[in-house]
Length: 79
Image 1 (spheres, rainbow, N blue to C red):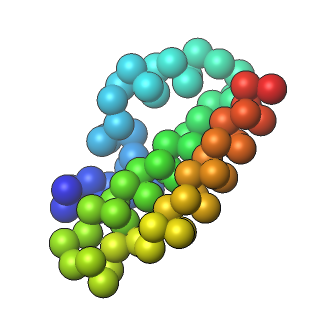
Image 2: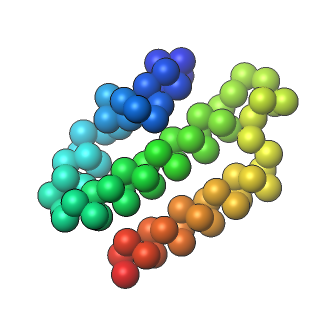
Image 3: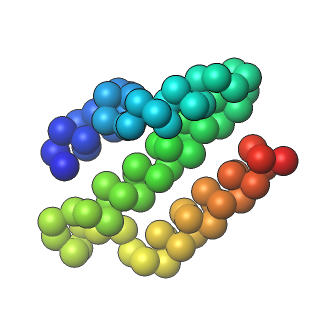
């Protein structure tokens, strides 16, 4: 997990499945940027939730808010 955290968010393409990136690279630039934003949001929540100390982990209320934002952004992309 440490190397994922170190790559986040600048080198996210180094830790994301290449199929996800290839799929988003075949779409228009605007959609690709939005997909990248979604991946960063998802990885951010995942990294925060997987902290060793419960005191450092994201509060579940914040997780719900983040997931709702991701769902809303996904719906906007799918439009």
